[in-house]
Each structure stands twice: as C-alpha cells, then as structure tokens.
Length: 300
Ligand code: SF4
Image (cartoon, rainbow, N blue to C red; front, side):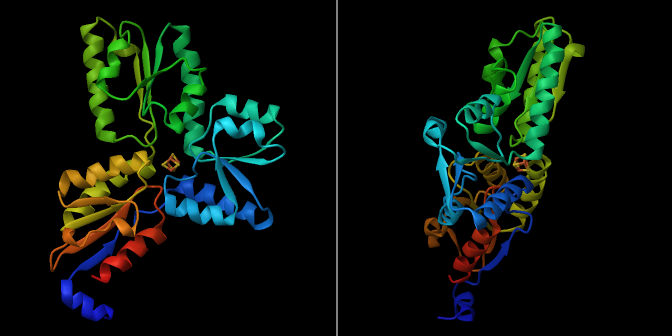
C-alpha cells in the first residue's frame, strides 16, 4: 500500500516539531565524541551521553562504551568522556589518579552554573547561610553541582524538602537546568512565605533562576504545539528527566498526549480518522528519531 492510500485510510496529518531535537549541549557533546571516534576505536562515557537507547545503540556501534563510577578503576590508559551533565571535582581527581585522559564535554551552561554555585557558596558561608539546589536527588547534573561545594548544599525536590531548612538564616537557591520553570516559581513563593513565618529576612534570600533557556523556552512552545494538534506523540527515553517534565507540559493542555520510547510503542488505537498528529520530544531525543516516528505514523 503506498502513502497516498494510507492517508486515504486514516486521513492523518503529521507535523514534526521543528524546535524539538537535541539541545545545544547534547549536540556539542555528541559531535566531539563522533570526531574522536573517527580516528580512535574506543571511548568510555561516564554514564549515558543521552537518555535515549536508540541513540546510545548508534554511538555504541561507533565505539562508545558506557561505564559507571565503579568501573573507573579498571580503565587503564583510556579516554574518559564526561557528558553534558558534568561531574563533581572528585571524578576529575579520581581519573587523574588512575592516569586517564579526560574528554570534558560538560555543557557550557552547566559549567557556568557550577561556577556560580562555587561563588555563591563562598558568599553565603561568610554569613552563616545555606545553599539550596532545586533538582532531582541523585541526578548526574545535581551530583555534579553538589560536588562543587563538597556536598554542603540541600537538594530540594519539592516543597516537602523545605522542612529541614532554617529560614532564619540567609538562603541562596539555584535550579537544576532541566527543571520546570512553573514549579520553580511556586517553590520560590513557598520559600518566601516560610522566611516570613520563621522571622527571617527576605533581603537575605537570593534566588538564581538557572533553568537552561534551551529547556525553559520549550515549555511555552510545546503548550502551543500541543493545543494545535489532536494527538501528541512525545518521544523520549524513560530515564530522561526533562523528557518527563516536557511530556507533562504537553499532557497538561492535550489529554491525548502519549509518551513513547521508540516506534514499537506506538498504538494504532490512539488515532482516529482525520486526526492531526504532532510529534515532539525531549532535549535528548534526536531529530532523526522524530522523523522515523513521523514516517511510521504516516503509514497508518
Ligand atoms: S539542557 Fe541546557 S544545560 Fe542541559 S545540556 Fe542542554 S543546553 Fe546544556
């Protein structure tokens, strides 16, 4: 059956979101790894370069092997690839002790945030205050951020975590780059309320909105994109944090939003004749995969 016949069958129209696809930091990291592997057989990536199994398989074919921190000991005279999320200083020290070469592809946005946290820490410690990091506990980027201050920061996943913070003293907060901007605003509101309730000073509270624009600008865009279509297919690896957050944004305005990891997850029952289908994804979803999904749906 050719494409014309299929369209006649379901009458679906399909649009791939032109603003989806890898973010700048991921594109840069992947390019550098690909360039290296043109003249080298192997590189060891500390953690998955992207939370996307399809893209990871492609890079594995080129010679990228994913390792974790416990495996660093056995990587003698190898090249250790630091992905866009960044790492704490302890990782660089360990790699140096083991004689490993590092290819550092920490995203410049994350590097800047790490530096701001180090500077902020020096300031706030002089006045007996606390650093808060709004992010997911255990997330690689958050581990890298907390490592900048030797672990002396409180990770806040949601409002519940604020109960252990002493708001009588100065507080400085930073956000993980991939968090939801709306949630961050709500958290700031809640912190201010607690400062007032505990008799602290709002003047001694500093909030740094360090959510990456590559992510934050996608929220309003995806809202518009999702209202424009009757069905949304959001493509993302299961482990992707920004994938979960961006998918929730689509779902909040379009209840017929479905999250998939690959084309095999697509179900025909999601579509009705004449539907307009929008395809979008996380910052770790390659554009080629979105096109692959579009091709499959056009065949219905
Ligand atoms: S989301 Fe932003 S901070 Fe994170 S890797 Fe991409 S560009 Fe860098």
